[in-house]
Length: 192
Length: 251
Image 1 (cartoon, rainbow over the protein chains, first blue to last red):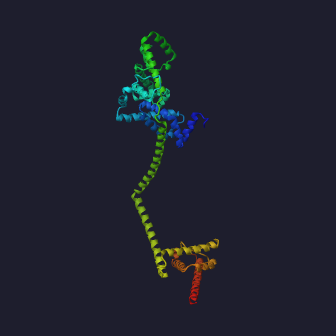
Image 2: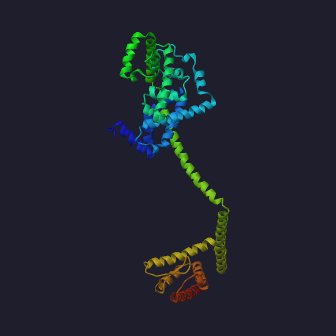
Image 3: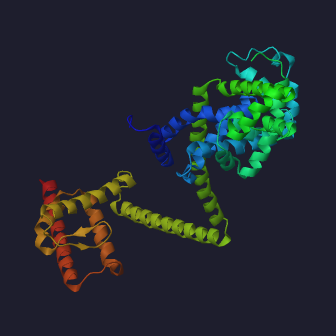
């Protein structure tokens, strides 16, 4: 098994997990949780919310593993579940308080990226500050499409499958998101 | 392409996505237009910041803990699902027994079973009391001893059957008594001598019951003759035993 390609190993692990092998599923979780977390964290800018979504996503993946179509990339299917759960969680968060109001409330001057030296590695906190800054004013859809396409580097086709939107709708949303974000970043006084 | 159109393109598309013609136009236009050049520099800076964000992969606080919590939640869910199916079964049973007809039928069955048990116990007790009276030794023979005697008789008869290596065909008279055919009479009579007095009385009791209650036993005429012959032999043997006991006492 060690000589197999990673894709073959993943297929084998999925088959084992579909038969109820929790150990195989644990390996899948270990390999993929960071990808799921990256999307959720960049969407929420909150570690707790992101971890909740990741946990909920893998529970849902386990419960619907028998529905997984092997013709689809596993990561695409996983992102689709993560994205849907991000929207669901954002909705429930909105009931308590507006997500964007909370982002603005949490966005203190200490987190400000005015004096950040972006040449070095960004920490979670600095990434949060930057994303909060550029995401302000975007709709959830625009933010998610921008994250998937420009930050996660997925193709338009993959983003369409994950979000369930048409490619033209994605391009339109991406147009507005990029314009908004680039204008903001261009005005930002940072050392690049 | 006008300046406005180019600026919109710069803000909304990535430079690497420009086609060769757009790249060529951009290169020439930026040399002449200061406004567009400034915007191009701003967009380039924005893209560099975005590249940094892209490179800064968010790190999970404790990857191992997150994995474990996911697996623990899955295992917990699996267990609770198993519990749900058990509950479903109990719910189904509850539904069935909530029907009046089923409850009534169950009550009747339980009542009949109870009455049958009480009736059988009553008969046994009656038989034991009667035996106690016949023995006239109530203080010595309690219920446990009487049951032990029945077991003795049964074992005695079974032993006889086993000694004959199963060649003896038998006639079942009651639930507990198996009688040998006439061919094994000698063995039976020999064994009869080894029984204690109380066991012999119990065996007689069973004989009496058999004779009085033929309806409970299916016996052919041939078997009936054999059994009667056996009974006569036992009676004869009893007299012999009494005589020999009498002689011993006199001596």
